[in-house]
Length: 80
Length: 227
Image 1 (cartoon, rainbow over the protein chains, first blue to last red):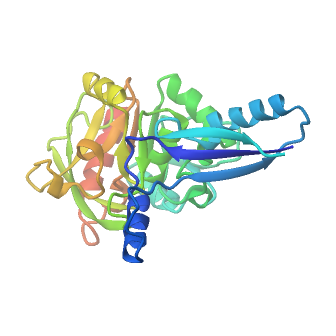
Image 2: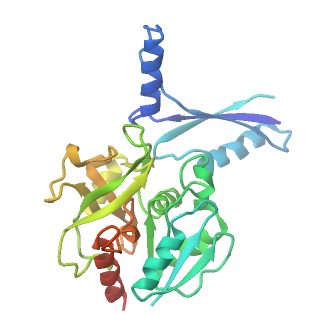
Image 3: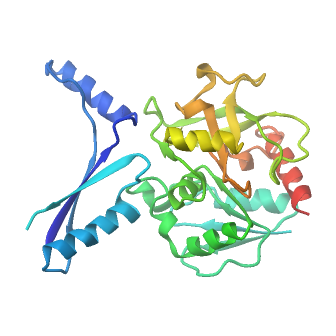
């Protein structure tokens, strides 16, 4: 079963890369952007058919390795 | 005095550290990241570099490598563990010191000499040093120290800030903050002060003819403190 996880920076954490992307977009003519925040996306294929168990497994991965909870949040999405 | 330097895949300051430690009288051993046991050591050093290619987050993969469980146990039992640069990133990722190291504020890799001020000498690393401001070298892309407000309060209450980026006279202000670090923080202790993480490289300042001698002062003093 494939489970996806999205890692985003917490609200108060500075994201200089997002800022530069925002500026580039602005320079390209995308004038109505308020803010850009860059994150990470993981697609994990786990050997598990029970969606709940698969999500729990990926959640544990997020907590232990994929996200640093001091600065990042994670969100789990069941894909298939 | 015995020391161990851990080599991770992608470490590149491990041999510099080996040279520095031996130069000042440590009997140093190099330890591979995939080993389970630390040799008997008075000091364990996590060196600078780009462990695991800085994949995911700097230091995050190295923090989960086999040897780190022994390093964590060694630190928890009071052993001296020092992380320099990437080693500092590994320490924060393994939870041995609080906070995180973010991408430098102005998105540039910084490679230059800086001045740092030692704030707190009540610890085995800086005790007996007879000056406060040192010139060290920094070379990093992710050295922007950050922590939550609660963590900052705890760090300050426990005197855990080890060194600050500063001017030659010791002034800490925005102008002398190379990477955007919170409060100009360049290095942090754990609560017990046996674990030190810092971005500057003292091992690059041990030859008068090449770089200056402030690293020599640091290592000589450290050896005497441990002895």
